[in-house]
Image 1 (tube, one colour):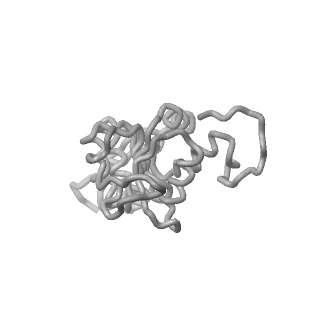
Image 2 (cartoon, helix red, strand yellow; image 1 turned 180 degrees about the vertical axis):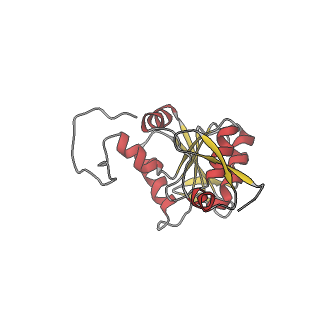
Image 3 (cartoon, helix red, strand yellow; image 1 turned 30 degrees about the vertical axis):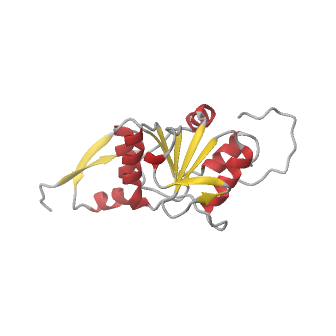
Length: 190
C-alpha cells in the first residue's frame, strides 16, 4: 500500500506519531479516545474555585438531565447559576438567557448540554466572552473541539457530569455515583 497522505495520531502517553491515513491502524485510532482532560485533583480545584456556572442547553423539562443537574446545583452548591437556552424564558424560577453573550457576567464554568457537533461553536462562544473553563457533560464527546479549546487557552472537562463530580468531591456520592446514604460530621468542601 503506497500513499502520501498521513495523519498525526495523539497517543495517551502524550506522544504523537505519523501513520498512513488509509491504514487500518489510522481507522482504529480515529475511533479511540486519546484526549485526556483534567485529573480528579484538577477537577476538584476547578469546582472549588468557581463562583458561577452557566448551563448551556438548560431545559425547563424535568425529565431532561440538564434540569436534574440544575436542580442539584441550585440546592447543593453556592454557585450563581445562569441558564442558557434561546427557546425558554424561565427555568427553576430563574431568568433564561438566549446565549452566553447575554449573560450579566462571565461565568467561571460553562457547563454544556449540547450534541457533540455543537461543541465547537460553544467553545467559540465561551472564548468570545472570556470564559476560562468549558465543562462538557457526561456522554458528550468531541475530541477535536476539546483539543481546539485547550489550544485557545480554555480548561476543558469532557464526558463528565458536573453534578456527579461535585457530589463525589463533597461526600454525597459513592465512587460509582450512587447516594451513599451516610450522614457524616465531616465538614463539606464547598
